[in-house]
Length: 161
Image (cartoon, rainbow, N blue to C red):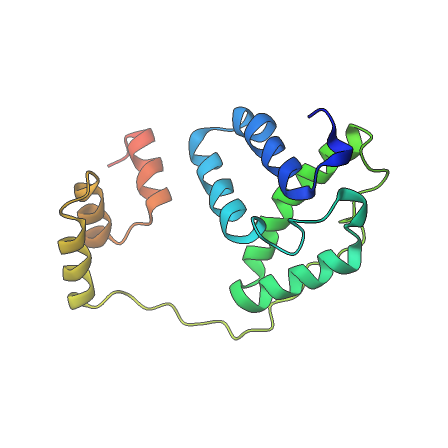
């Protein structure tokens, strides 16, 4: 990442994400990180800033916005990825201290929503939409067993019946 001083956070984060993070994790973990990266980091308030311009109050406000829009779990996922990036920056002497050091992850102020199962019509709609997908049988299996994707993956990996 030569010439890092001339680059903004978005460029450096992308280079780190693709060049450092991606090779260090398994594909399924990288996909989860990619979703967080694309949804909450790309084009964020941090994206156009230089590293030295990113201060704790800016990150704190950013986290509060994420919490309001997506919930605290989204903040925690985003924080995990940003923490790794900023630690990498500190380790490489790009910054003296991570701007995340004094940032507090907001508490969830939203009411806990009751989870509800799909209706029979929603399941039929899902199955119909999945027919053209190569993972059709996975959708059918998940819909009729009630398993979550991660649970089904573990069962398949461990060959548990």
